[in-house]
Length: 622
Image 1 (spheres, one colour):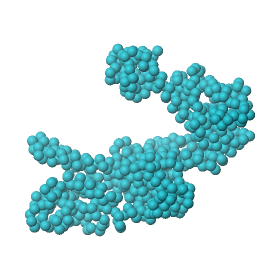
Image 2 (cartoon, one colour):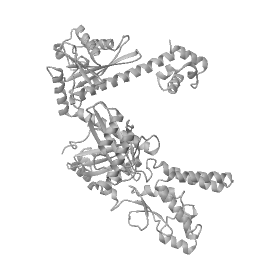
Image 3 (cartoon, rainbow, N blue to C red):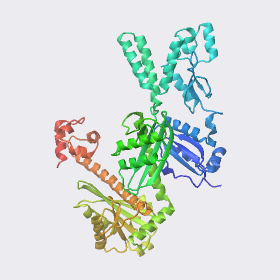
Image 4 (cartoon, rainbow, N blue to C red):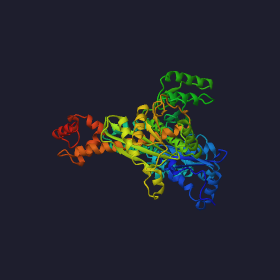
């Protein structure tokens, strides 16, 4: 028996955030839906050696052909989405979550003369208002126990209620203040039903009304020196706030919205759409597209929204996007027309969520889009067939004799001409070789082309003769391996500088090109026109990825140098120790902000006096 299934995703592809996952078979039927605090840790359990899995788990994994996941903001949000999908897809391997036959709900029997709150699996109680479903009975019981402190309504059985009526003695909940005890006449049945209605309204999402009302009553009681009543309202307010803190992402029951998240780069865009109906996430759509044109985010939003509702989908009254397009008013009119065509009333509002629960959900959707884009790029570059095709296309486009099995890319980074550094990243067979990355510190340079010339010159100085290298032992440093292709981040000037460095060093037989970021053009030495690769080609995708990796590596090193540089400069100032240096950097947030500050601004930092601030100001400008 094989250790695990062949379609197992790589551990690095799976995010570590909380989320919900779905296993699908070859026919795309959902076999199992689950949730996790840490998706990577949870899913790794399914891909342990098959012999060690539980029989049922092993059968599910062997029946599946793929797994997909959706990142959410909190565990509570994962719980809600998990149940939405369980109800929607009815997965055959999810029977254990049904606890015999059904899910537990919180029900308030508003149709009764004396309403009762209870946890039940029966959805057929006449006149009852339901909330849920929930995965764990203990979780909803905990919620009920908490809410009874703020809304002391009846939760006892009919038999217990009748016994209390007959004896004139309330149960324990009445004695400890978790029931208003209508059974013994402490409140009338009408007053008790009002408490039950408030409980149901609060659970439906009308929370701000009650917290504000209880806070007002607490202040009024305290002002009237009725401290016993004020303490009672204080406890109610604390219970309400605790309940709200456990469900901060749940939206109001009347919220109907579609929330879009978009992550993109020059070549691709990942889109996530969360459908919220009745305040709950009812569905998730996601897709990744190759970009034929280099569109800005606002333009992408317009295209995404148009395509999302160009079929039979009915747009809700509220659509949340990461950025408003320029013609958002016209787009709203079009969306409103789409609603009218599908017999839905109301105007559609296109907006960017700025604060509150909707903004938190929008951030979650955006995180999903970013993860989807990273996964798409990782899988695309990791696909052997795609990599082979990319290398073959690069060979053909650049007129190389052989495929570029080893490519090195160079980028330069500096801050206003200071702390100049360069990076070298290596891709072999289309995959990064991070153990072979190199960093260069450049003491003096006039511009980026001079920096590229110095970097390439220092690199090729380490090239060994191939015969010598072939006879060397296996411990030869990989830095000496001869690349098939050198890539520089830049256009004609940078390529010309790199070509001059190769020529001055007498190095022949290494192909050279540059990639200009603005239009993703490929420039060759001594060429007046760039090579234009198709924007959706694997070749351009691979060159872009190695360029982006070189840029990231250079920026990281430059920031390290910059931080070390300013720290060493500050450490030379008398009276400025490590603790004060740390406080300076913490206060200003960056070296740039610190250098831009005047002596007065520096003096505002804790522990820095006017004299010391003046010394720091003068030293940073030497």
